[in-house]
Image (spheres, one colour):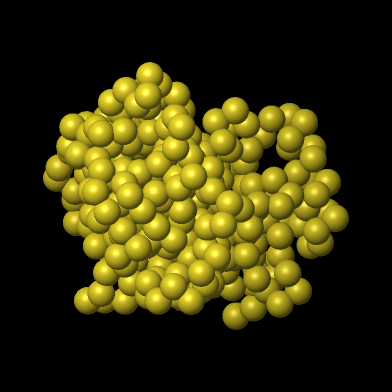
Length: 345
C-alpha cells in the first residue's frame, strides 16, 4: 500500500491511541515539498527544537529529517515509518537507553528488540561485549580529540587471507627508508635527537604496524610526493580503508570508509563524528553504514559507563570493522615509527 498523508496520519492515530506511552504524542510535521520542509525546519531551529520532521514524496517514500538537510531515514514501509516515528517520540520522553528500550517493549516487543539491535528489523542482534572497551580501539579516542598521538588514523585491509605490507605502505607515504630498514621504534624517536626532543618533531613522523587484520598508519601532514608510484600503491592490494581525521582547532573530526575503490557514505559527503549523539543512530537508517549504527547501539547498551561519545563510536568501529591499535606498544614506545624522508635535521 502506497503511503499517503492521510494513510500515515490515520495509522499514527491508531498506533498512538493503543498505547498510553504515546498519549498526546502527535504525528511529526509532514511536508510535501522541500520548500515546505525548509520552512518547518527554520521555525524549529528558531525555537531550538531538534525534533523529527517528515517529508512525504509523491511515490509514497517517507523521509525522516532532522533539520532541512540531514536525512535520517527513508522508507516506503508503513510499519517501519511508524516504528521510527515512535522511537523518536519515546526518546524525547525517556532518559536512559534502557528506559527507551523498555518503553518500546511495552508498546511492541518486536519494536523493543529492533531498538536494541539498532536496525530496521528485529534480526541480527549482536552479542553483549563483556569486556573493557578501553582495552581495544577506544583507548585512543579521548586523546585523539586533542590530536594526540596523531591527527590522522588510517587503516588498510586487503582481500581475505592477504595483508597489506606495513613497511611498504609507510615507504610509499614517504617514511625514511633508513628508519624503516633499521626497525626504528617510537621510543627511539622520542629520545633526544641533535638536541631536539621528539615532541617538537612529531609532526614530521609516522607510526605504522598491523593489528586486528588491518595495517595502520598514523601521522599528521602527508608529505609531498606521497603516492607518486601509483603502480606500487596498487600492488599493495588494498580493498578497504578507514580514515579518521582530526582538526581540533576547528572541532572537525571526520570518518571516511572506502571499499573497493568507492566511498561508502550513502551520498552524505563528509561524515563528521560530532553528528553522533548518544542514543541516535549516526548514519542513515537502513543505509550502507547501518552495520555501524547497529554496533553503536550495542556499544551504548553494553557500556553505559562510557560518557565520551568518541569512545563509544571507536568501540563500535572495533566491533563492526575489527579496527584495533596496540595500546601497550604505544605506551611502551615499541610501535614501529619513522620520520618522513628529507626531514632529518
